[in-house]
Image (cartoon, rainbow, N blue to C red; front, side, top):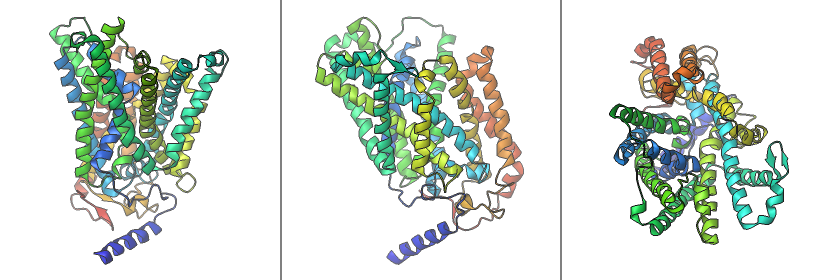
Length: 498
């Protein structure tokens, strides 16, 4: 067995030595450390859910005028769709041990993969700055609560942010960079702690509110409006779509994390506990807290930072707020730091490492002055929402290419072959079919975003994009599907790894 293992490692090292430097570095190459268990995947999703954004989204579904069982049904339906999609998108990266940007080479070509990589990177680029600002704002509120003497620092601003705001933003920026700089193992350890820590605080906060209000003060329906049967059905469908849309970004580049999974069995188990179970439990706890604030304070408070700040004990407030900040750091690193790190590194592997790619996003997020971006809803609509129109088509194209066109196989060596002999060279390193399927699907998504009369279907743009991208690419690749029925792959073809 040791000789066999050594032989396998030697073969892998020899293969990597032949990879094109235009396509490979240590971060993008197939990983040897596939040691993430189901709990690590579970923690990944906890970090993704347990944030201020996740808190508000979960609470908002209970304000739609639906009965509690209807809301829970929508949440369950939406999160099960996310779970199914996560299992599908995880498989090729886990099989090949490569991140999202590299697995995109299979569909878009070894150089064409930069198109989906940069799209995802830019989305994370902007949201990284916004999440850092939200965490910094929370830190500023904590600072002012315990050190009121800092108030004068909020009266002088530069580029739209006060002196104290800049200080807090710099602290949050540095803390995230420190975790990220130590690599994926440090990130894994951080999210293993951050997600459960939020549950402890949320559970304690929910217990405190129930103690203060009693069970009679808790209502699982947070809206008094009544809806017709047709309106209820439409709200339920919309809520289900919103759940999927909320997770669409991290879902697209889930391969950045599934590449480290021990097996697909472990990943499926982690997805099962981290999505349906975790999201529903988090939603119920959230509604207990939000509903309790209505009874306790006379108004519904959907900002968890504000709720925690109203607890009597200063020590409890400090611990709660710092935990919420930690949770926001967790989701920011998971959703908006790791992705651009791999995506930008994919553009120039020899010049941009994983660390460099992440720091490009971090520095660029400051230059965007995200506090101004966040304070302008129109600007957010015309930047982030427009970029979001690309996510659905990309997801559909990648799944159709792997499961239907390539029939569930990955030629790992060809992912790093920058010669016309490579299987994923296509035409000059670009696959015209994938790009041709992407463009019209994205165009329709942009139309939905910009035309007010189509606003009613805007919540379904991800589903529309998936269907259009997948359908167009399947039709354009119909001849290739026939050829792949009897494939003649080169060395190192991965078909299945459970």
